[in-house]
Image (cartoon, rainbow, N blue to C red):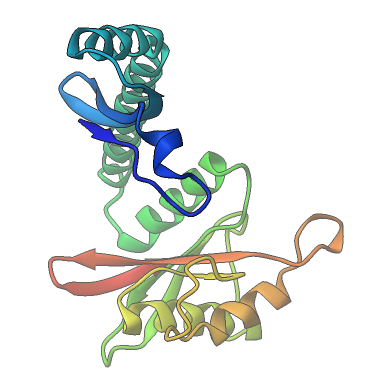
Length: 212
């Protein structure tokens, strides 16, 4: 697109009548990745075309960057798929749900760098029941910590969304008090404030549990 440069109070018509604004899209694998916009002296159509072609050639590194990022995204998607299949294979090794959840919690903790992972399932009546806690072969389900974790899971399940503390979504309509309570009870390294992320486990349209 070639347009004459409009006049303005700080650019009188006499200073702009010999200039034009040129805009040209940039594509990578038939996908729009950017736009070049520049101002140049008015010339023939051939001059403008030659200038745009030179700029598009000079912007070839943007095409290479877009293709590289595309490959990285594909590799990340493949890695996520492999991880998901590995978890399915791990679950299939166990006959009892609680044992499978404990194995998954341990594997997720290993995958995220040793952080504690908890898994809860929806019990009759809709309340959450903590069934697995990584780094713990046994835990007291009646403890204050277990109750706090179950409340945080229920909070995410009831709202049908992932919740975190500190919050990262910036949505003031979401209730995350229980996330704050769990984070406060589990400080991070060197007694720094803890962080919590709770993700509902969904089967179809029904939330059946949560991972914290």
